[in-house]
Image (cartoon, rainbow, N blue to C red; front, top):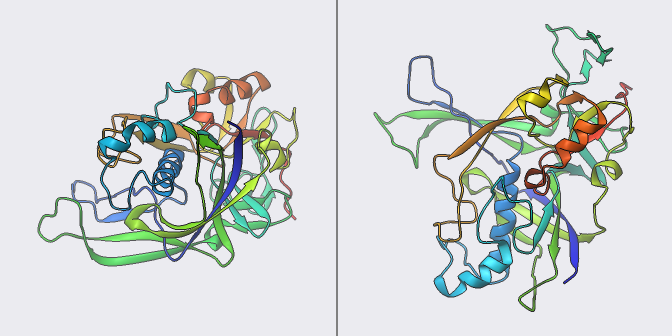
Length: 340
């Protein structure tokens, strides 16, 4: 069996939302404000790919809550017998690896660089302090292309869409509670994208993975999925993004798992992102991306964060294959960002 790498583009048909973060007023248990994240968790991307493989290879029908007993053995071979597990260092069935989710517009790839510019000036760490940083101004939230020539403010790409006075559904409702929801739509021409490497065959049958219209994210947001074969992305983080090996400055292209012990040897400009997951098997209802109260949780460094670390620690981060193989822990040594 030979592997094939695909570039998958996901263009939303309208608004979209990922991973809500309910917020209530102090002392009030009711949550009235749900804010979408810009990006889904990479475990969500893994669940999405597993789900599409089941649908496209006729092992599941849309709306079906679980895999039938007659199809389970074949499904286990196709997508693996369980969902994400931080102890699993090999692929999931025919899924060998997945890249970090990123943004495209035309042929340009965009990644977050949100901790490197303040008031239009490059922020530099000289080993002792940050230069050109003013807390009152904060950082400029930028999306920068792989060529470094195209820069967009995140809020100009992710257009916020707020709805108010919506009844809460699929939750326990008391006193007819209402809430506000913040979701997003893309500015014209932008879409999500990621790479995935799949084995061509499973149990002697060709693996089908094609263009389609799909549901992804909260509220069953509709996306146009375009799939095209691409060269293997073994050097993904260096080929896609301008890099400068040996600079000691690393950009997080994805959320990153790093231990508190290792953080003692790092200087970090960034913030954390809560990460939660539920261990599931193909016996679990809606197994491919089923979620209830998370059994496992931790804090990850958020994509776009900057690390000043030694090469040895950078290699250690990327060596965590359970996370790296599904698109976490992708970092790249970068040169100073240009402001013009």
